[in-house]
Image 1 (cartoon, rainbow over the protein chains, first blue to last red):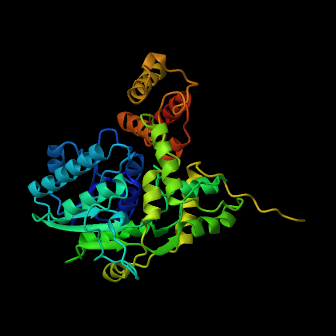
Image 2: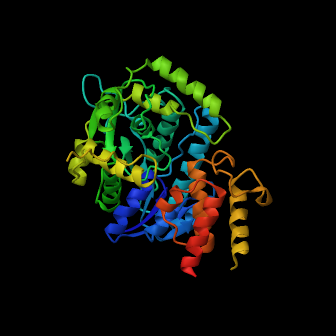
Image 3: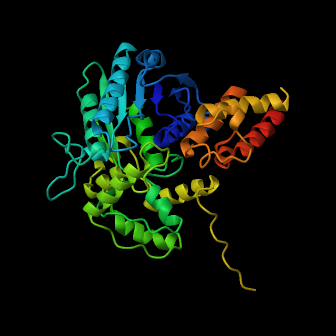
Length: 333
Length: 83
């Protein structure tokens, strides 16, 4: 099975490349002219030029591959311009779908998000629970729902939608999901709302994607998550791990949205990012507990524990200078 | 390639990703605070340099670079090693 990866230099993508390389798989990574490909070069991955805004380049990149793994869905840096962000996201998704059809790709595996999963009253949500329309929680949720819908309605080839939870682990250069974690580990008391998050080790997401690429007759939609946790309870429990003072109680959803919106306006037009991102607030506040039994069963995965993921994240963050080395234990003569 | 030529090439690449022209760059300038880069674009810079000069710069080495001078030193070290 020959695989072409979009977003190979990202958080999930880099881990996927590690898995495919370890399996000796036949794969190629699409890269933009300015992509950071240091990790991919170290892994000796084959690179091919391509850009989601250049449909012809995608056709060239996809040709000769049976499977495309699309881990480069638009992630809005800001929620301030929802129409423009959604239009860009849909245009790029359509380019990828059309290119896959023209290149005669057999299967496209699309990395979506838990933001598209609807709550199930009185129980855990699973693959059947999806918002009936754009949920209206914020730019990120609406845009991701629109993209997933476009992919799910594709009829020219097989599509599989993968919805990973909050990914933890190594190679998170953009420090998205793990920004709160890093702030806490650095001794900052991050203002945060409370709600349900579904944690998952990014290496397990990578394993899931690599397995789906090869799987005969996979489900059309799969949730990839390990644990359902309260964000505040998780952060509070991690204070001991990072030897930092106890964090403040969570703030209300409205207060969190107000902080995130103000920060977005303050950093708009600069390369800086909001310390509390609006999409993180929305993901937490509207998070739903999920049952990922289907992915465990179909893919034969044993999801790693939260602490295994954190150990890997800490080791990576220390190697990259994002976290200080652990204190040396005191020795007594 | 002589050192001055190598540095000229690297400064040209830095200027492509920053708000300054190559002749305005100084060794002590910080990639983020002075040149308007973020963590992502500073890594993209090292990646572009590695590809342009065919150098095996590791992610770990690139992550430690914060200034124009640091970039020039890292590239010079790798270039000499590969020569």
